[in-house]
Image 1 (cartoon, rainbow, N blue to C red):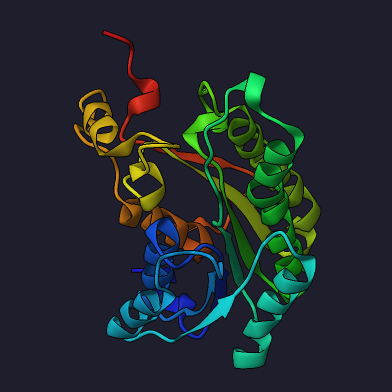
Image 2: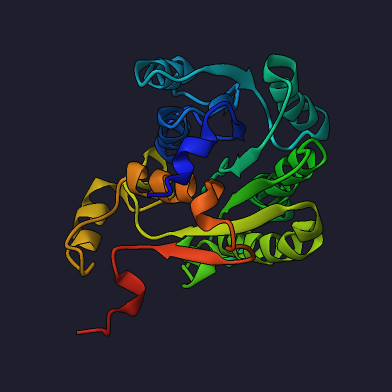
Length: 260
């Protein structure tokens, strides 16, 4: 039986926002099947990227930690170049780094708007641009959108919604542009996932909000970072070799449920 995960042995990926949550679990999921990973971490992130590296090594994988601020072209270029320095190649990029801030539109000043788009949209572009310039041969790019912006709106989060909607357009455009080079581009639209970001009660749902949201999801609970990471692993594998320019909603059935 054909198992394309075997073909991921000795491939190399960069993953932004990999100190925690979906990024951490993505690094581990890739390491499990033999992909070496550059673990991207923001210097101001309170989570320890060494825990990600330990988890990668615990499953028999190889990784290196690299600090990167996706608002900086110079730093993102150096981040992608790290893959070539360490292993001589780059095959996959997962643009996962993002921020979430709560701002009503009447209080949303230009700085808050720009900061959000610099990270959640332009940061994705910088990551994919740097990776695509270094992938020599077939490869895969995965962008992180959100159910907010990707499917639904969310009050007090117009800037976040706009950025995540923009990620979908960026991903589709790159699918067309890069197809002649054998590079695929797809986006993930996670539903409500329990991450350090969503647990934040100020800017997101918080623990109580997550518990309440889970009751409205057909699957009966919110999702886990691992459940997103394994879909990302599928998207970089040869199992999805004819799959490009698409946006996968991973939400436990939330978006197909009729309201009670």
